[in-house]
Amino acid sequence: MTIPFQPRYHPINTLYPNCTLATSPSSPPIFLIPNFLSPPECTALISSGLGHFAPSPVVGSEDVAGIDAPVIDPAAAKAAITSARTSTTIYLDRHDVPTLIAKVQSLANIPSPLQCELPQVAQYLHGQKYDAHYDAFDTTTSNGAR
Image 1: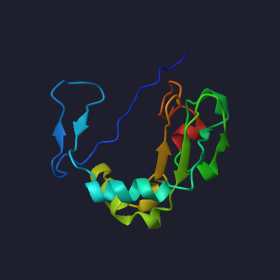
Image 2: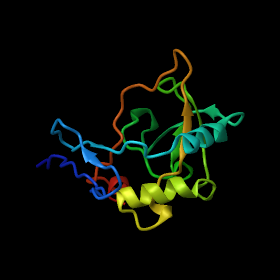
Image 3: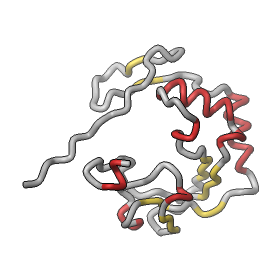
Image 4: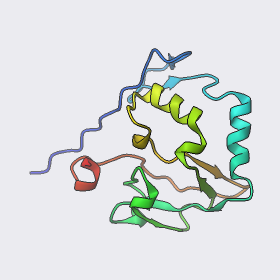
């Protein structure tokens, strides 16, 4: 007997400043947080990648080519450069962007910064792409359940 995958959504802090539910109900719900990062914070984040970009890896579990089971820390998983993703990326250390991490923790109700994905800046030049994929965990597998 196959048990269908039941999606679960991590609840966000709906009391986060300026957090509003999008006007169209959806599943999962879509929230808007205008000015989550200030213009100077955006500029600093973008600038942090300049001169350091490398081909963007596709990170997955057992099947990197499937692009359907990404993990939180790319260093802990198999990663490959594939034609499915042609952008460039730089992964940042959490300690280099403490304001961003603090905002993400507050919004997503994450108790430890180590539970946040590594921050990354991705650059897409004209014609570059990332093929359709799922950013989700299948909690019925050992990797998805961890």
